[in-house]
Amino acid sequence: MISKQIEQVLNEQINAEFYSSYLYMAMAAYFRSIKLNGFATWMEKQAKEEEEHALKIYEYLNKRNGRVSLKSVKEPPFEWKSPLDVFEATYVHEQEVTKSIERIVSLTDGEKDYATSSFLQWFIDEQVEEEYSVLQILEKLRMMKDSNQGLLMLDAELGKRNED
Image (tube, rainbow, N blue to C red):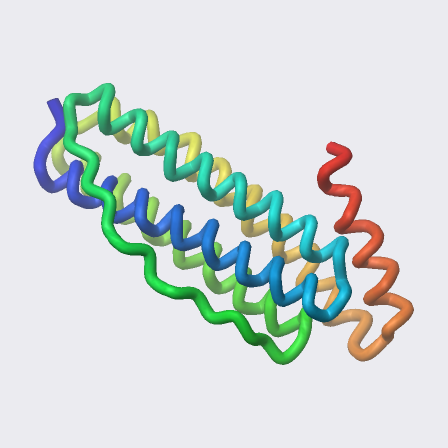
């Protein structure tokens, strides 16, 4: 059985993961609108992963006899100044998600809920990877500054994400 406090924060994390998915779909739509389809493909794949994260927590809560409580997902922004602006926002967002998961782990440690702490280790490892991959793209965008050629090359590279 899972405590009410852990149940509540896991439900909040489900909502945060669905918001991440929604945010990345909004970013994908932005990229489609400016004809950077490789960037859009990358964000669509990211959105799907975030949805899978939410469902992973959903399934875990059910296995632990917790109650899933789905809340409204807030509306994400849909306009950005540039691809660089999008990835700066993405990096900040991923850091916020990491902090959220770390906060839940701290709570599970305090409650000696070792099963949930163990479950969340996958998410911690995943966040390290997420932050790293976003930072790699962000650093490339910063290096290329206003180079349209560089932007198109990165767009082609990011479009290959679905080939993985």
